Length: 123
Length: 153
Image (tube, rainbow over all chains, first blue to last red; front, side):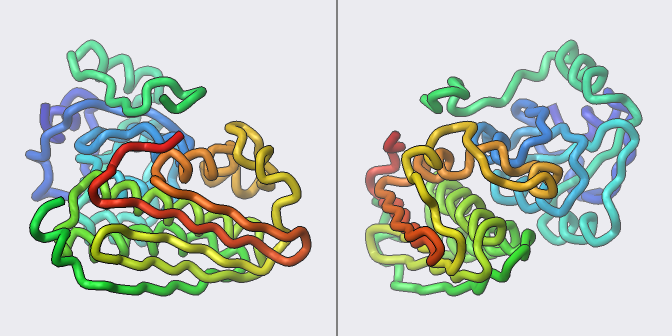
């Protein structure tokens, strides 16, 4: 699956990263906690979140994600979009809520992206 | 170890961290990541170091009045050190427990403060030491080796 497929499934608006729509998406990760993203996300994941601050893009860059989807019609401000553009991270905004977004991605066949599968012990 | 890693020159990077300078953590993690990638280091090593920097610098900006982040690239390892003047940690074992947090609401609102910072750092480090004096400050040093990329829990 590619970012352009995600864009279609979620009827999402591409906020930046026109040249990144062919990025491969190897799994998804839906979360609003930065530390959980830093602990569990695999490279080339699609991050689905309702967090809108600059940490999302910094984290996306550190964790080598293939793109970020903001749910519930949320859009970050221009500074955050500019930072994503600079780091070649495509940002999308969908009007679907978190649950609907994950449901649509799930039935599309894309798998969960998870490292350190036991969240309690971190094993 | 790859040939590139064996030839890695010694580099030191310094970042000052101010009180409530909440975005410096992500910015410095992002900057160091780019530098380490340019040095040709492996993706898993770069990710671990960037995660340690992110969480450790975040802790300093949340809990200290000011501090310093130092990243040193050696021929066989990378070390991340944060040193701060701040409240200190009264009980390090408790602070290491997942879910334990003293972060205020504004931090939680940003997506941090879930009590996972220090456990995340531990998970990504091959060696970790924390020294703290209440009312004085905290020094954290984490090392990631190029050869042993296994997590020490």
